Image (cartoon, rainbow, N blue to C red):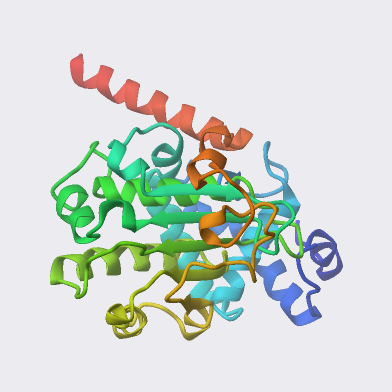
Length: 320
């Protein structure tokens, strides 16, 4: 059954759609059966833990589904042809990569876990934030040398570092409210405090480009602001580097802030922010990390169980 423009408008709470925008979203919703039937695995219809399918199916939250579809649509400037390809590619990537597994089932090296934190500051301008604490390794190149392409933790695609980084993102997305006007994105902070890396090598450039490409293709319109803090003046190449790899849109680049200090008071409530970043909180980021308390959505759990059961059946078939 076709979705009317007014029906679609009523499901979108994050922004006010024009009739033209709502019509494009309506057409996209109506094309879901065709899109899903053309996937590598039509049974895999999950994005960010939510079911992307027709509203007659169980577990479909129409408002959240439409908000997620809208993010993809906005990223492609409401071009339905480009969007359908992006959506198919993204669903196929999720089916192959299994990002929910990376976030909620896999375990990673302790050194990697010491590089990432997720915070939830309800009284700050930026509520959900992922923190990448590269200074804990002193030299970020070691991340890619030790946990890069030659360090895999499972048969699933991607290096240990890539799967860890995607898992951090997927966890943080369980905390945002897709239907909110203000809380439907996350912030990212990359802290280079004590980092001694003054230039980038080809291996690191290749790995970084892979990560940025994956995030750009599969996590559209989810970034509010990205801070690069405590960046020494001698590392002024950081922002230039992101421009030269040519996989980041101008709109995204405008969300980047490169700072040679670590004071983030302009964006966070001092009563929630640790002192090291200019706030009043005596605790460290790790003391207020919410990563371990994040729960996967109901449909995300269904997908993980389904994938696990299929893997078990596959193993049993091989044994027989």
